[in-house]
Structures are given as structure tokens and as C-alpha cells.
Length: 159
Image: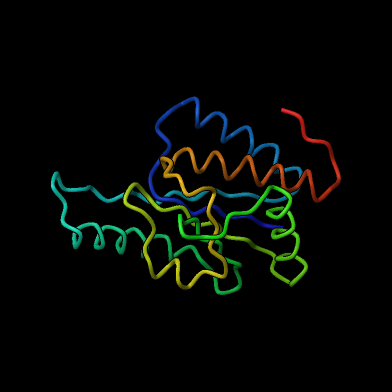
């Protein structure tokens, strides 16, 4: 199983970065995982809605270069389906059972994810109706991927 996390921007907080790296290390026992960062676009001081859409489009086109037609794509978006940890584990297991060897998660930048990427995704997932910084979402995602593998393998999970 291969997991790609395609995201906009870099994690700037060392503590968050260290936690992400720890979960990536733990996940590597179960799957190959790659986090691919694309540069975020500068946001004007007083952006119009057109400016924001253009930023999302540019960032989305950068992300799109890393998506293969054989990937199962899961976009993270507020309007997506919320799952329990067990349901998320089942989702990952079902994707692999259905013949996909790579799951590709998409995380947008501070202005969100390009709508075309969302509409072209195989699945749209939401952690919550709350809005979180994209850096924290990356941490939440790797923790839940690790938890999913523990659930799939009937292993206990303790922090």
C-alpha cells in the first residue's frame, strides 16, 4: 500500500513537524508514505473572491501534477463526509480491497482546495465542520492513518 499526501505549503511550527514525522515513521511499518508539498501562492492584502479562486486554481494545478490516474483520491474538505476512526479504517481497507495500491490525500492551503480537484476526487472527507489550520490537518491526517492501520491489523493503539 502506498499513501501520498499532497498539500499546499510547508509546516512552519517545529513541534507540529516533529509530530508529523513521528507518525510518518510509525506508518512506514504498514505502508509507504510520501508527503509532497507544493508552494503556496502569495495572498494579496485585500483579496477579492476572484483572487482567492485564482490562488486555489494555481495551487490545484501544482497538486494535480502528482496525481496518477491509478490513484484513489481523497480530498479533504469541510463539505465532505465525516467518519469515525473505525469507519476511516474500513474506508482505507475497502480501497485496497478494490484494487487500488495508492491512496492520495489532498490538503489545500490557507484559502482552501481547488474545486475541480474536489469534484474529480473519488471521495471527499471531512474531519469536522470546524475550520482548522492546514498544518494541523496534516497532523490529524497522519495520526488517523496510523490509527487506521492499527485498527485494520487488530492492534491496540495507545498514545
